[in-house]
Image (cartoon, rainbow, N blue to C red; front, top):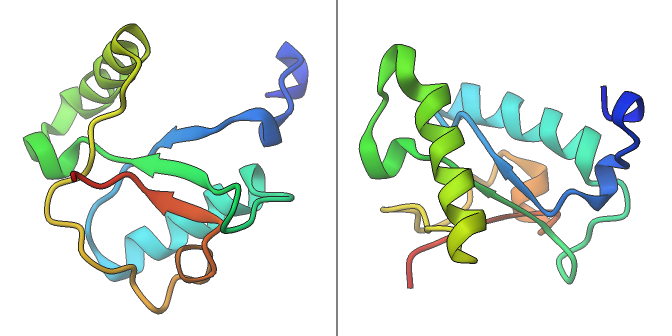
Length: 107
């Protein structure tokens, strides 16, 4: 899909994830994201990730729309909101532990 529109996945700097907050779901999702977008990522150049679920909950059928609105507002305002309640990366998700992915946190 990215090749069809001439975008190199390694040029993407932020991904809005589904972010269920479950150890099984998040691990699979983040490792899939890492395998596509993180070729060449490191802790000094991580892929930033976020999810609206910690901020507004799971809005069921509207969750994709809510995520899209968040990304558009982030572009407009030049700032990506952080995730509430994130403390430490799950030690069973390699791409979070080694720093290829970085969760945007509230400060």
